[in-house]
Length: 183
Image 1 (cartoon, rainbow, N blue to C red):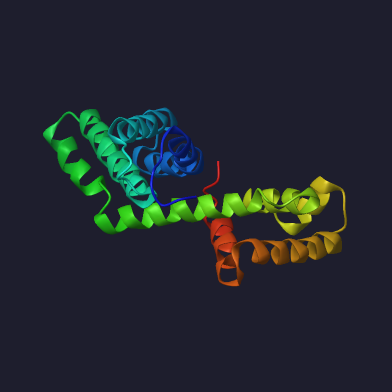
Image 2: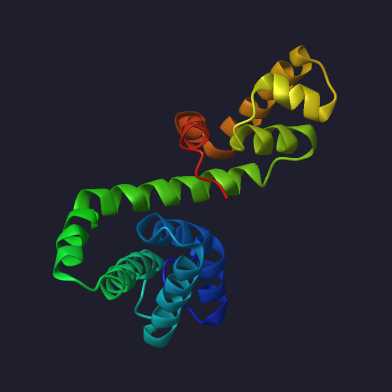
């Protein structure tokens, strides 16, 4: 992937790589899947309207998240009608720190999903079930294998993930399991 946006193919790549993460980001603000989908689509549309070859991919991703946040804020404001509701809205709106934290969370989830998609066979099945919050014994029952087989296969899966995303990033996988934010 080059650093600069160079046409519709690069936009499609950005869309494919980041749509789910931006949708999760919007859904964390709006708590409504349909409104989050609309906000996400609008953010990507605004990027597409303004896109030119002077944008780097990092600029484009930052633009998408900032635009998505602003769209979500507008939606939240439109959904509130009374002064009392407006005061509550001020308290409910995420802080700048939580905004950055949510971006980091969604990007972490995106990276882990990308790594897991490179797994195959039982490793992929076990990773998927683990991300759904299933215990080792539940995974064993679902896959029809012994508990020791699950443990052994998980060990192999972690080795594969380390090779894909690096030793220091394997913690992302465990963090994602604990977050249980996958949909």
